Image (cartoon, rainbow, N blue to C red):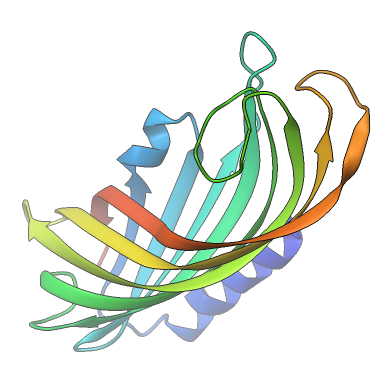
Amino acid sequence: MRKVFVWIMFLFVTLTASAQKVAVKTNLLYDVTTTLNLGAEFRLAPKWTLDVSGNYNPFHFKNDKKMKHWLVQPEARYWLCEAFNGHFFALHALGGQFNVAGMDLGIFPSFKNNRYQGWMVGAGIGYGYQFVLGKHWNLGLEIGAGWIHADYDKYECPHCGEWKGSDKKDYFGVTKAAVSLIYIIK
């Protein structure tokens, strides 16, 4: 799946090479959760951009806690003024895999006492604002809501491998939250 993500990124860069602006970014909220992330945004038209972000967390913490996952989140944005400046509305999709244990995140009944391993897909809408900080730097804020479908296996405890069964869950709520530091290349 990671190879597919690399090819998709290459395709977007190739197709939008004539765009007037390209930006790279990191979501500081993901950084706080030790999730490595990188995004790229391409101007497609004066008021339209395409944002693609990839997120990866390979870490295992003390006391059998882990929030291992990878996530890809493409997003189309419509800007009310001009691309990379001011208010925008967005439509995003997401997909990835997860292996979470020993944490209470509120999404599943009990991440704290069990381990959940599976995949997810979803979509949502968002609203955001970008502040121009300088010629090449912006600060972006965004919140998004929508739906996520997860298909997963549940295991007895965070560190053991005793399988308790498979299940599915649909989640409706926040699907994106970002405070992004953005560097505009062109």
